[in-house]
Amino acid sequence: MDITAKREYLLKMYPGQKWLEKVSRMSDKQVAAIYYRMIQDGQKPVKDDPKERQATIYDYDEDGCFIVRK
Image 1 (cartoon, rainbow, N blue to C red):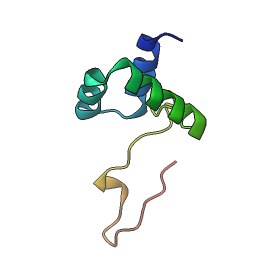
Image 2: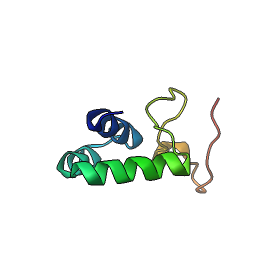
Image 3: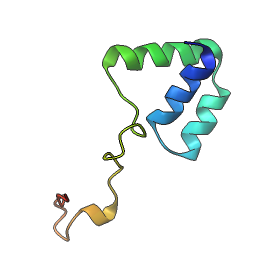
Image 4: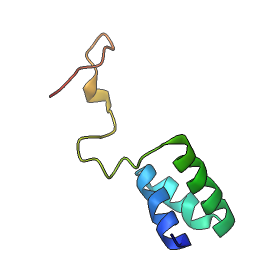
């Protein structure tokens, strides 16, 4: 896998402008190190699974309990 593919993999890990900016400023060696660490830890990109999404304040009731939605 070339460095461009590794950068794309990292960008899929966390959606957001700040992460995109951080990854674009990283050196090739830093990208490779983070990529291999994530692979070793078994982390998978959030964007690859359409069922996964980030929780928002609307996913909690007034008591602060998480609302399970199907």
